[in-house]
Length: 67
Image 1 (cartoon, rainbow, N blue to C red):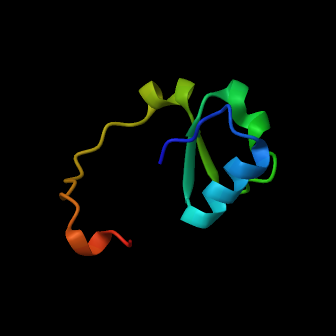
Image 2 (cartoon, rainbow, N blue to C red):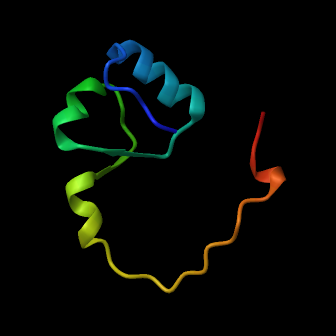
């Protein structure tokens, strides 16, 4: 779920908590907008250094989404 950095930090925190996000992918300069987030964070600068994987990713199924 994309987060707009122009939103107030309180709104961003609500959106993250409401979605039960397990991971935030963020630019390091924007972390100050999420002072209360305690979950895992992947910095954009580290994406290219992630290890290669042979994992097979299955397509999402309709039951995977909650409305």
